[in-house]
Image (cartoon, rainbow, N blue to C red; front, side):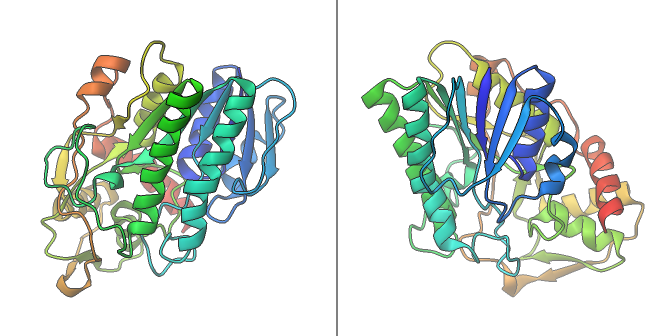
Amino acid sequence: MRILLTGGAGFIGSHFCDRLIDEGHEVLVYDNLITGSRENIAHLSNHDSFTFIEHDVTEFIKVEGKLDAVLHFASPASPNPNSPYGYPQLPIQTLKVGAHGTHNTLGVARAHRARYLLTSTSEVYGDPLEHPQKEEYWGNVDPIGLRSVYDEAKRFAEAMTMAYHRTYGINTRIARIFNTYGPRMRLDDGRAVPNFLCQALTGQPVTIYGDGSQTRSFCYIDDMVEGLYRLLMADGDVHLPVNIGNPVEMSITELAEVIGRVTGRSIEMQYLADQRGPSDPQRRQPDISRAKAWLDWEPKVPLEAGLKPTVEDFKARL
């Protein structure tokens, strides 16, 4: 297949490029590099089946030649308000890539009659009142809060994707990605795993926002890529959203303890009760029944096993 992938220089996007190349596909990446990095795809730069174009996908896209699939991964995703790469610092860009970027990439898929994969997010569920979260759950969201630029961009992107499917018969599929970790994450990403790893490896106290009881479910990048690839290649009616994530739930305090064991460092936990972000979900756990039934997929890599190569990658870059 010849595949267009937006956001291919990002964390998940670059790993998905690796998988597509390994499977024998030709990959065309569009990325404006505001959150992605050339380093993530440098190892592919001389590959005959890989092409990188620096381009903002909120602007018009036209692809010459045949195209079999369009994958829209592009978007800022970090909630870190202190990072230049976080969506709180890039609110307009985040909304535009969810709206204009989705519209443009769907237009390319329609022009080429190509299948289309949107990477959405568990953030569409907001601070959920249902636990674990099933795809049928509509969410508990704040449409004007500080996190809303990301949440609402993805919710709009899902609506646009389904509109193209229903109106034009585009073969679409939607992945709702839950917390994912692994090599190539930005060191200043702002989420728990990179924060805790950087602090543990540099001998700093591990800062926990809130009382540490809030929960997350952490999926290793290899498992995430496998789930996304199966969704892309799936036959039949797979147009409704599919949760892709690890259903093993743990508290943020428990995560810090695991990172202490994996890094071999003595962890000092510093709780910052008054610094937990607005609308930060208290619990996050996917129901992956649909992924199991439709894709025969579930994650295989335990947290400690996935953290070991992640730690080595972070050590090399710190």
